[in-house]
Image (cartoon, rainbow, N blue to C red; front, side, top):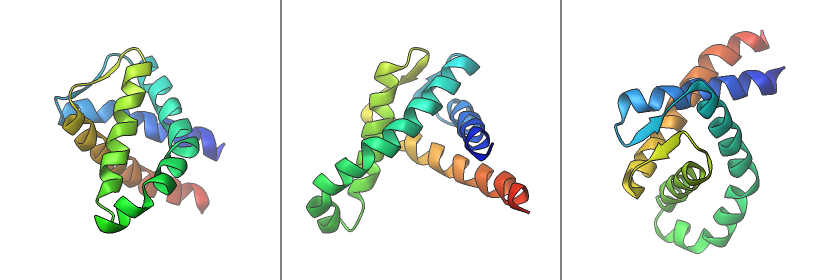
Length: 116
């Protein structure tokens, strides 16, 4: 049940991002559901490998390179999910950052009550 709730929270966060950034566009709730699922899978399966491969650059940049990796993965998902569009790489970096902050805030508010 917690996994489904996390997925729905991430969907809501992804659906909120276009209202705050014009470089991200989500056409429907179905597109947001699929994009949130694919983002979760990509962040679970591909992101750790990319972080390991780019560890020297990440250390040299004091961790700032992770923002570029997150933006790249956000942009990559937009290329595979119809109805989820990101214009420009820097828009993807900003969208990924905003998506993470909104998702974290909603998870903190909603899942804290679910644990009690």
